Image 1 (cartoon, rainbow, N blue to C red):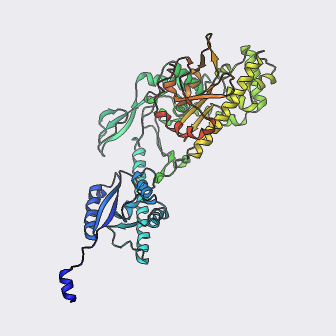
Image 2: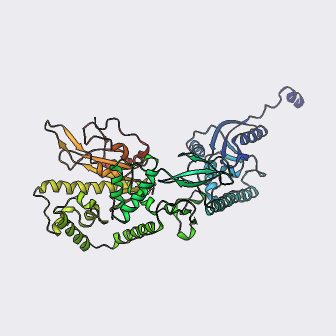
Image 3: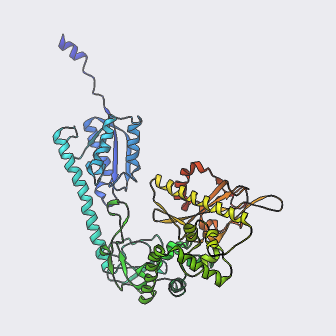
Amino acid sequence: MDKFATAHNPPQERRRGRAAQYLRMSTDQQIYSLENQKDAIRSYADIMGYDIVATYEDPGRSGLNIEGRPGLQKLLFDVENGLADFETVVVYDVSRWGRFQNIDESASYEYRCQMAGIRIEFCAEQFANDGSVGSDVLKVIKRSMAAEASRMLSQKVFLGQSRIVKLGFRGGGYAGYGFRRMLIDEVGKPKAILKPREWKSLSSDRVILVPGPADEIATVRWIFNQFVNRGKTEFQIANALNERGVPAEMNRTWTTTSVRNLLTNEKYIGNNVWNKTCTTLHSKRKPNPPSAWVRAENVNEPLVSRDLFRRAQAVVAEEKNGAVRISNEQLLINLAKLLEKRGWLSGSIINAAPGRATKSLYIHRFGTLQAAYKLIGFEASLNYRYFDQNTRLQRRRLEIIGELVAAIERVGGEAHYDTETALVRVNGEFTVALWTARYRATSYGYPRWPVRRRRQAVSDITVLVRMRPDNVTVRDFLIAPTADLRRAPAMMRANSGMRFDPFLFQSLAPVVVMARRMPIEPGLGT
């Protein structure tokens, strides 16, 4: 009877499992190409009886961290939110899952999948990822090997780049204002001037710096002369260049940062300096001590003399130290001397005066300009209501700046307000200027808000806060790249800008971070 039943009722074919595949490829490891991984996973799935129903991939992505890996992030999201229509995730090997420098991080992402009921299997490893003691030990070893491979590769790359720099060749990056990148072959024969965003294609080629256009070289020398011999600040130099319509590198607007970077870069005296900052293994950027810098001297044609450059560094050092040491009494003495010389005081007069004290520094030290004026016996105007409004506007501006800095830090960024330049520096990469625009009415009663271009000349991004008729309450704001806002008319109309909610300032932080790539609002000035 059993034989009869077996002959006429054969066992049903085993149900095939549903699986997803995760693929990752680093740009420098073509042996791990996505197609090779797919072929290996396909063969493994046929043997194991899996149907590949979903693919998550990160092409050309580093395995050092999860940031910048949308494929792995999407996989974890689907798994933890019940969107995964599979029971298994097949990965080529442990290194494709990631080369996390902390191997516990790699384990944590696998654990999150396991807690959601999803298994992780490595098709090219010589062990089954079955949770046994043996497989767990081997997996830990493999994770450590994957992390160590990245560290070894990073060290080899560093040594190779250091050798290139010491030989006088460029280690990467843009040429810098006043220079151009020259491509040369293995015997030093010039091949071509590289344009922006053009890079060498042959590993045997090298890149050196050569002087750029004559007008840029003249501008570089003018900047050093103004800073060293005329006592101009980076703020004043940037303003002057922007007012003359001189574009900075990559046709950008000059800022205090771009001027400072030019004044302190040794390439302008012929030196090649590299490794000033460290981002090893995708870690957070941090400055290296001078002892760790890699340098080669006299490798390109200088644009300024070493004596002029040395004097510029002395001024920079004095500025850094002096801004901390200068007392309130000395500030007032300097202000009284300026009053005696000019016969009048204003924020623009203070900013234009030789020296390092700006209007913002006086406001920071004394609360308002009027308070500093009062201490030296200067009465700027009998219109106290006007100045009271100015005081309130300045205080409100500083409050909003504080909210912006806090909001950027809450979303993971870094922000610092520099009272000397009145700018917010974000992530050490770009600057934001935030100004309030006083409400004014035309003779026919239409609202207008002045746009003061000279204020916005030294920042990358400008946030203009527009006030209501009482000049106390915030109406709205406009945020735009400074270069675009400079094209705005002198007076803005009511239908420009965006809605501003001071209680939802958190939302402005990511907007500021992205604003460098945003076009100006179409309604500006209409």
